[in-house]
Amino acid sequence: MSVMRTVPYQIIIIMLLGLLTGGCALYPAVQVAGGAMTGYDAAIIADDYLPRSSVIGGELHAKTDVTLERRLRERLDLNGIKDLKVHVIDCRAYLVGEVADRATADYAIQTAATVQGVKTIRCKFFPKSAFRKNTSDDKRLSQELATMYKRSKALQREDLRVEVVQRNAILIGLTDTGIERARAVAMAHEVGELASITDYIEVRREMPLAQAETAPAK
Image (cartoon, rainbow, N blue to C red; front, side, top):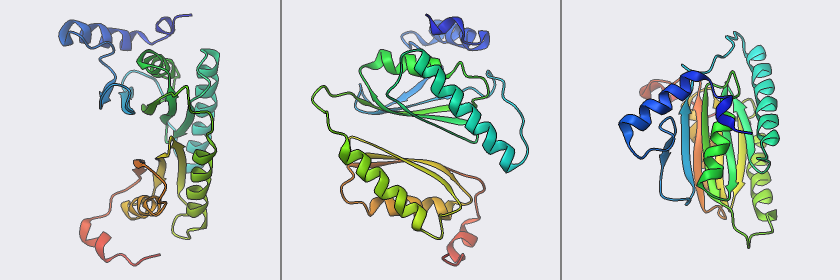
């Protein structure tokens, strides 16, 4: 079943305009950084094209995220995409994992774009290896860092998620200020076995630099 049939017509128009003006770009709405399948990021700014509910209040917003995450998982599963990790925070979707090729990655992004209510989609993909069978190290490292966050008094109230793929850590979440975000990233650097750290943590509100520098440690 073609995913393009369910993509809102506004996105289809954007794609067609991009193909006419951009030449070789396959999906102009998707911005990809990095080389071919060395682990790349992609973001779809869908706020203007996908309708989303207007929710006021942290508790209701959290319930919306849970619903969107469930719908996104179901949509990917129905389309045969079962290996990616999915998170939704503040109506922002995150896809993390291994993919066989670029076509699979693009298909996953297009499928995620059909979920109404999602504001943005951010991805971190790595090439799937036929020789890599044991993922126990990734699970252990992910649990180790997640436990560090839970035990930190400064981060206990923050919504932080950790995924580790091929020893590469992807930090996902939402913190109150940049101070908590910086602390979360610094703690990840304490895990010596990680090959790299990608920071996808968003900040609710930015503190002025002078205030951040003089803020007491929690």
